[in-house]
Structure formats: structure tokens, C-alpha cells
Amino acid sequence: MTVIMDIRTAPSRTGTENRPGLQILVAEDVLPNQIMTEILLNQAGHVVTIVENGAAAVESARCRNYDLILMDLQMPVMDGLEATRQIRALPDKARDIPIVALTANLTTDEIAACYAAGMQGHLTKPISPAKLIEIITRLRGQAATA
Image (cartoon, rainbow, N blue to C red):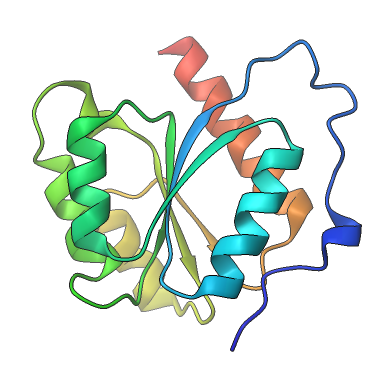
């Protein structure tokens, strides 16, 4: 079982109090990873919705507006790559939600498959709090200029 991070190393909201939090969908099937990701994102001021598989991620993206999706690659029912392809086929702005891959093992071929499916980034587990905040900041900056 992979544990994402030690909450004692999670960043505080210092310096982010004046920035509204993002609506973030986390597609992750492992409960400890769900809990740790939610804690980290909540501490950074974001609002988190968690689903346990790719099919639920597609349905949630269809029904709600998210600023970001963190997508595990290996989940039951539907994996993260297929879920990403289906989200990219959705109508309206749902298809443009930035999606970041989450996985314990990421090879060069898997990274290429993530980008080919329509993902904008990737993070390996255990997630580095600093890398997560860095990718959120980068994607937030891209959205602001779009």
C-alpha cells in the first residue's frame, strides 16, 4: 500500500490566503492515498471531490465544474487513461479541464501515453507536496492566460 505523504511536511496556506482555492477532482481508488491527497489539498486551500474509479471521474467531470483533475492511472472499472480520453470527448468546457496523472511507477512510455490521452502533467506517488503545489501553480497560470 502506498502512502502519499507525511502530513507534517504538507505546505501551509501562508501566502495563499488571498487566492481562491481550486475545485479539484481526485480520481484515486486507494483509501490512504485519498485521505492524504485530500488533507494536502485542503491545507493548500482547495476544495476536493474524491471518486474511486475512472468511470466516476468521467461522470463527475460531466456534471460539475472543476479547475483540475488528479487522475490515478490504475483504477478498477476504468483506468485513468481511458477516463482522460472520455473526458476529452465531453462537450463544452469539461473537455478542457487540466488533468494530471498520478501513479507509483511512471516509465517513459507511460508518460507518452498520458500526454497522448490528453493529460497536461504527471506526478509520481508518493506525491511531493512541493511538486504538487508547483504543478497546480503552473496550470493555474496557464488558465489565467487562456
